[in-house]
Length: 107
Length: 116
Image (cartoon, rainbow over the protein chains, first blue to last red):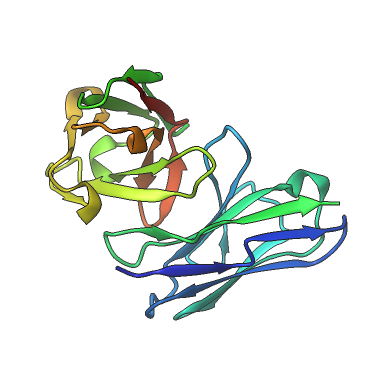
């Protein structure tokens, strides 16, 4: 199975900061990566698909990049509402795998 | 609009089975794969398996082989996930997820609690 290694596991940043979360795949997965935001008690919400495409309705401060084995989610200007856990996911094959998650705290 | 509405919370005893439903609307049911993902409290996301609603073909994560069954009723645009021989470690929220070109819509989740 393809492993997704996500870092950091937690981060704390201030409003307005630029924040970056990274995922590394154990083998090349082209651009078959999604990023999700999850708040407590709710289902994950799709932010980015195909590594860099912004899902409709998602604020433009979210962006994704990468291909092959290295992928990045960037929040250009962190807002209080961005406090959540973020997950990467690969869907290169029928079998999906997720990163371990990054908990983002907004100071 | 696209909706995946799941069945309510369940409490089961160890060794029992649970069947979670995922009723879809707002799209043509047979043209999108349905996946199931679970999340134990405070833990990450775990893929369980996949079903093609048109053919009924399935593929399950090795961890759940022999215990999980994914089915559908195309007449009511509903997918089902049944997990048997439940143990305490199966206590989790179970999600159905639609996949077109990418995974996009998730159900609201169904909490399954396994407790004596």
